[in-house]
Length: 229
Image 1 (spheres, rainbow, N blue to C red):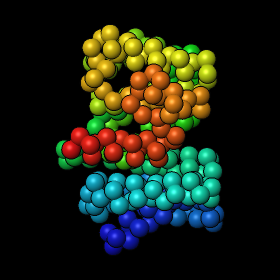
Image 2 (cartoon, helix red, strand yellow):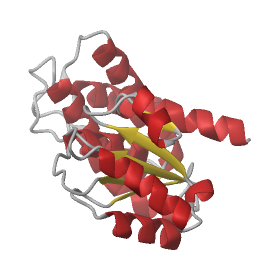
Image 3 (cartoon, rainbow, N blue to C red):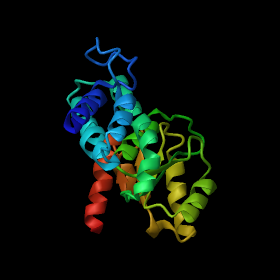
Image 4 (cartoon, rainbow, N blue to C red):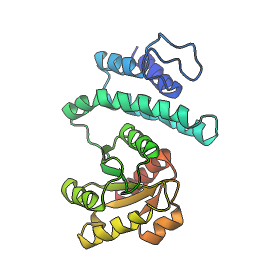
């Protein structure tokens, strides 16, 4: 029974079905339980939050990521699945806290000052939550001083910076310099992403990594953790 619920939950993540009212990629699934209902059911059946995350949510998003890479899925498809996982993580949060399940690390993410684009950032946030990271999303158009201040206060393992515009990507370098001046640069890994930036730009400004998308960000962070271990 538990295996059936986990398998159904994973399939509904792949289908991008948040609730029973959603049709799904293959359609004609409306009326059957979606990710939110199945997550609640799994908890009622005493399936651990950790099992739900690793075997259903994360496993499902890995399939979505593969489909996206192969161009079988497009951004709206991926976003639907990511939003479903985000909703499930909101349900699971109190259970994770109560069971004292350790997170993979603290991650702060923000779209830099002058830039209000957030779709890519939001997808990254949801995927990282689903992968087991504790995410603090500061939103868009975030001033450099606020980012540096929260890094000092929150003491994250990782900082993600997003910019879509060539006019705002320069702020990323300013943030890294501000972190250096505050004595915080060597205490946090800085990842950058967005249409305006590249791996070369990450190296130019002294960032630790450039991430193509949310799936790549999960792989980069997991690789950092393996190096640390």
